[in-house]
Length: 310
Image 1 (cartoon, rainbow, N blue to C red):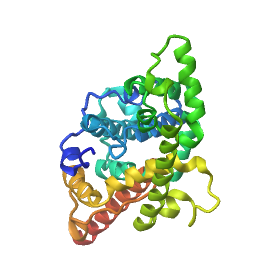
Image 2 (image 1 turned 135 degrees about the vertical axis):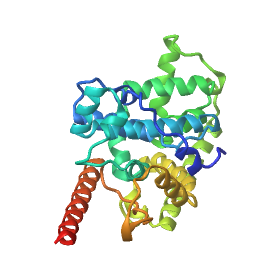
Image 3 (image 1 turned 180 degrees about the vertical axis):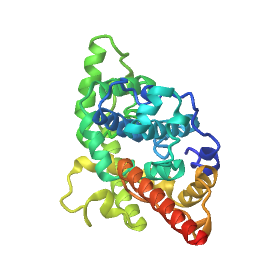
Image 4 (image 1 turned 60 degrees about the horizontal axis):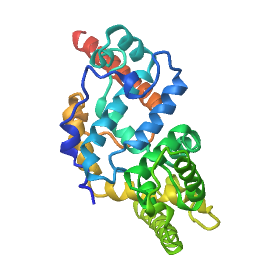
C-alpha cells in the first residue's frame, strides 16, 4: 500500500518558474481553450496523487499534479497566457494586480474537482477508444508481464466488465503483429482467474458507494441515491473513486491548511487566518470570483481612506 499523501510533502515542492506549461499539458502553443481543457482533465486525473497505486511513483505524481495544475492556471486564463507567451516565465504570468492569483485556492479546487463524476465522464469520452488508451494498455501489459490485474490497476478508467474483451483483442492483435511479447499469464490465464477478477471488481464498486455515503458525496459522485438499476459498466469508475476517497479521508484538511499557509497571500483584519472553504467551481469561475473579491477589497480600502482624510 503506498504511503498516504502528506501535506508537508506537496507544500515543499513549489512548481519551477522555468516550467513550460505547453509541454506540461502536451499541447501546441496555438492550442484552443477546449484543447487545453481536454488535455488538463486527462492529465490531472492520470496523475492525481490519490490515484497512484505504485509507491515508487508517489513523489513523481505529487510534482506532476502540481505542474499540471499550475500549467492550466496559466493557459486557461487569456491574460496569463499572453503574459507567459511574452515573458516565458510562469511566475510573472501569475503576477497581476487586477486579478491576483491565489495558488493555494486554485490548487485546492483542482485537487478536489478532478474526481467529480462529471469530470471523470468527460475524460472517459475522450480517452476510451483512443490511440493513447491503446498504448497505455500495451505498456501496462508489458510492465505486468501479461498479468491483467496489472493492466486494470494501471490503465485509467478501465473496467473489467466492459473492457476485458476489448483489451484482450487489442493485446492479442499486438502479439500477432510482434508488437508485444506473448506472456503465459495472458495466453494461459484460467477461467477461474478471470472470474475472481470480476468478483473483486464488483466488491470494490460496492465499497465505493458505501464510502461515498459515509463522506456525504454519494450524489455528487454517483448521481443518485441508489445503485439500483445502475449499469455494470460503472464498476471500474467506482473502484477509482473508492481508492481516491479512501486516501483523502482523514488528511485532506491538514494538507490544505499547510498548503495555504505556505502559498496563500497574507490577509489583514477580521478575515485573517480564515481558511477558504473547499469548492467545486471550475477554474474560470474561480478566477473571476477571486478578481471580484480583490476589486471589492480595493474599493472598500479606498472608501475607508477617504473617510479618514475627511
